[in-house]
Image 1 (tube, rainbow, N blue to C red):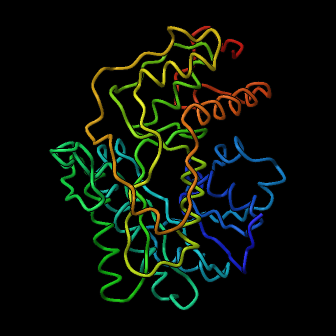
Image 2: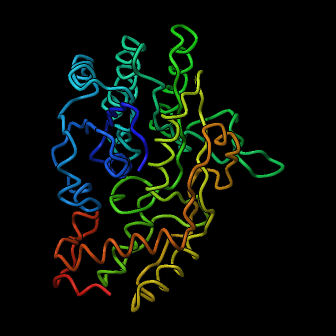
Length: 342
């Protein structure tokens, strides 16, 4: 268990996938954590935490687009560290760009503004940016690798908003000396990853266990990052106390969709032939440089097969308790009921 040193963490977007794993990591470290979210359904946390662990979490229902709401949460709970994860993902930003800009950009500015006013006791802000702000053409034409300082040319609203957040973080450092660390995930997988553009691999694990056919919406290769590793990296960034406006690409395991399917089939007996994928690759670079991440210290990288296996085991446990529900995992329920998981 890590020493808390008087830490009190606020995690925005705590009911999402990465948020849930971050809350779990903090509880298991014995650190007070305030889960700040506009939603009211803690199902992702319940999937990976015991009732006793959940009892250690303080839940605050709040809206990051309301600056006063953010400030009240920081003050009422004596917050020392902020992990900002609340955001709308690619499909939701595409469906409603004004709402996407309000949540992803204005909401993030509110977090920075609120922390700036309390910079004597909070910092640095740690937030998630995204590899999703890059296109394939942004990779080095010689090596095919995406450098951490590559110029981004976003292909969707979500990417534009993430790029704006990095720019605003830099200006808050220039104008106010407010430190921040942005981390750029790629394809995060693990229990709770049930929505978003790159959620297909995780849904495929669930579908295999439920005996359901499932087609992943993209092919090619991508950089996979296990959700627990992402959470632990966020905490390492917060505890690093780096000064300045930093942004780092996350590392992980480079794997193809064919390798993913093969891994699932090796872990889930009887799943052969159930999982397929569209051959079209994601419109983002797959080979991503992440050397700069060393600035925050040692961070975990779970081997790909181990992460898939750990996810399958959690889902199996949920199934044994009658809590693996297809619709809650982003899947359409089977027409004739749910088969016994393999």
